[in-house]
Length: 211
Image (cartoon, rainbow, N blue to C red; front, side, top):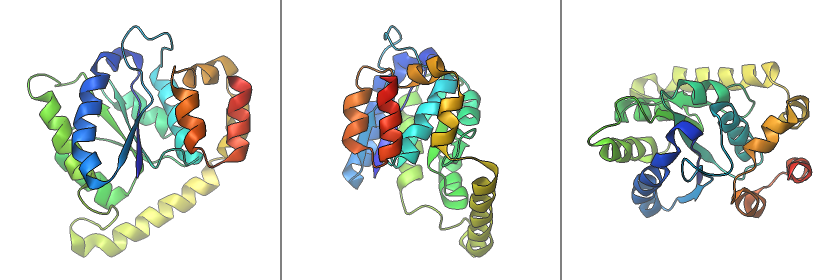
């Protein structure tokens, strides 16, 4: 699995802490971590939480990433922005129990973490425990297990609803403020990371017009 890490501007200074915790947990599982930044608070490319949603949608819909780890101060803005787009099911995760139940019950492909709220002594350990429970086993198996059948049915219903209520991402992006979208893909390493993994030629062609 290719796991993308994205930080917005208010919590960019924590990028290396988050990346280290994520890699420590998931690389032994055979997963790859791809860090899209922001890498520091003074990066030239400043991402808002709305742009986090745009970037997450581009990565997931193009299959450049299989999963997105993101967040903001409270995690709420990043979650709402991510869920504004097709192909993204983002959960708000504060602790390992949130991580496990979201993975097993909701079977999403992104999480938004509150990187400011309660992030004090031991914050790096909490991140490790979150990532352990998020990826400890195949997602979507249900919790508790006796609830697996209705939970899988509900997830399928949600997927079908989203297909009806969202347009294709390639139809949405040109209708947005193009400076906003350009800012979402302006990271210093974005082009090298994205085009090496993108599997959607139409999205790739559109992104090239922005760069």
